[in-house]
Length: 335
Image (cartoon, rainbow, N blue to C red; front, side):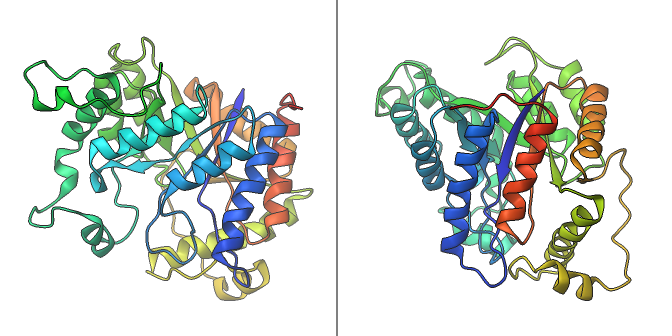
């Protein structure tokens, strides 16, 4: 089983966004040494709790601080940007770190409707997400130099010109994204931690409807929350910060990640919303318990790679969680 990391650069209460960014670089170095497959950085806008509005900058820093692990975006939210600009950025990253760059592409706004509106260059239009498939195809054409000869963009050569290119993944949390990934023959990463309800149907639809395209056979990753600790009680204590973060986000409260003790007080006796899904957003517990649960999910969905996201208050606890997870799956450390 391959394990990977997705990082939202969480900002703990009492710390700073600058420290959160340095935490990301430190965690990436640990993941590289532990044997994780890839390290993706999310894109979120105008959220005090998350310090990752520009993943391409962190990708460059993380790739420079690591040696083997693949580094990429989880993801670049294409409706906000021109296809040419994204192609140029990731061509440059590929030139600097050939064979190690992933371009994960998403359609979500990554913030409020106001944030999305402010990010748009063309504000006269109702929504930039309506032309997402067209933007995606244009991005492919820029990266592959595959515009028809009579297309005006065929004269544009994306610099820097280098053999190969970033590996492209489509990200999503719905049947819509599963359908697009299948139709275009793209590898697909499903964000179970965002919406766990359609997980099985989306992954199975993707696999059953896949048409050979940029890859010849379907490849899927499931991204879900994971908290490992030395005891179930400690894991549940750490998870309180995550639960409160999710509740606050639903309420439009974008404050930094609370400490577990503060989170438990604010959570009180109220229960989390019931989600109708086979598996929880977060798998929480000791390494053995987490290993068994993740293995069962992967086997049922016929996956050979899982991507873990861990949002807790303590950076040390987050590092330890990934260490315990790596050991439980017997990842081969790198030197």
